[in-house]
Length: 208
Ligand SMILES: [Zn+2]
Image (cartoon, rainbow, N blue to C red; front, top):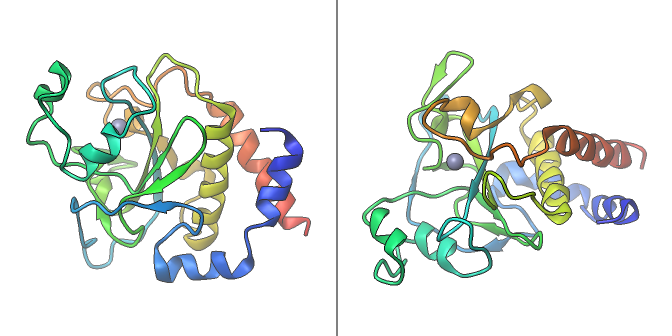
């Protein structure tokens, strides 16, 4: 997405959207696709970490309804041999950013989604308790789209405004919180580009 769009998209996020995110838990421009795979956060768990993932179903194939079906426990496991290997697994993420930048939300940000599994960040175990999980439709070695970087940064900016405990240093990949077990978002994810895009969006908002 060109830089001018970065600016206009940021300016279109109204202040009320940001101030209510803490209450609604819903990203205003996301399509709501509720998953049953969530629970309450433990008492006293402050939302303080953003985790970046990737997913594609089957791996490496993009564009179908399979991810949404999987997170909603209605994937047809007979449709592909890979789907047999994930039968019975109940997982979710708060958000999915598709290849075209469309944002889908499965779980309220206020609730605990099931995305991190066994994990720890900065000595704190069970990252699902205190994190927000964002899936990028993708694969470890396939470059992400500019629309995905833009939307991820836009969503991260809103989330960081609502929960200031999520600082730039508290945005991690799944591979960072579950090393050896998970590899996503993979070498294809350009952290430098993402962080630069996030900075640009924040600067544009702050200059208003
Ligand atoms: Zn992951």
